[in-house]
Image (cartoon, rainbow, N blue to C red):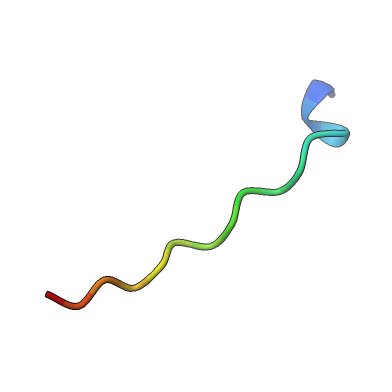
Length: 17
């Protein structure tokens, strides 16, 4: 797949409002 060489997406940051 093309995404094989793409960097993994960073985990969602917890934003506490």
